[in-house]
Image (cartoon, rainbow over all chains, first blue to last red; front, side, top):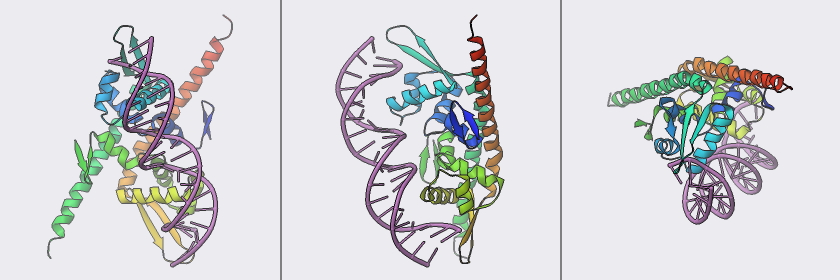
Length: 122
Length: 122
DNA sequence: CAGTATCCGACAAGATACTG
DNA sequence: CAGTATCTTGTCGGATACTG
């Protein structure tokens, strides 16, 4: 049993999911990994997210210490989001994960093609 | 843009999340990584999941080709779940991810303690 | 531009009952 | 034991309107 920020977790995977789980967090981290982005730029990279969800997820990532928020005090407002060192330390792992997903998808598609071929009349 | 099983994905992260995203999938994979488990054993390792969700998630993982299901034809029924080679290939990455989460949580807790110390009267 | 606030619907997930 | 089926509940997340 692991205790973190007054929450209990059964295993380290549960804890990790609390940090980067959910529909959007890892995608946001992934995009911020390439470069620092303004709110509106980030929104563009995630066409399907709503403004509300983007704000909400960014706040949570900020609270976790994975993303930092820099506010330019000007009109119109400008806010930039970037990865903290902790956020950056996660990037290589996410990269490996993506590569795995891509490889796996490709291997399936190739298998499918083989099946199509072998399903021709014997 | 990536096409996989007739779905479109904007980036590889989206695709990967389709395979192992959600509240339970990576946890299930994680536990099956240690050893093959029967349905009821798996249920025990995930106290908070309902029978319905466990069945549902297992079917999806099976459809993705990450988990395989072996049925002993006997009464009472016995069904064992294990990782496919593809599922196993994901394990090292999940392991790294968990380790990262644990390290990060620890570093935070340590930082917190430091803050408590330094917050004593100067 | 970068947000809040409010309302609302869809779907994820829970509870319960039943079965091969 | 390992599921289905059905019904209900709750949360996530969308749409819209408004603001410093």
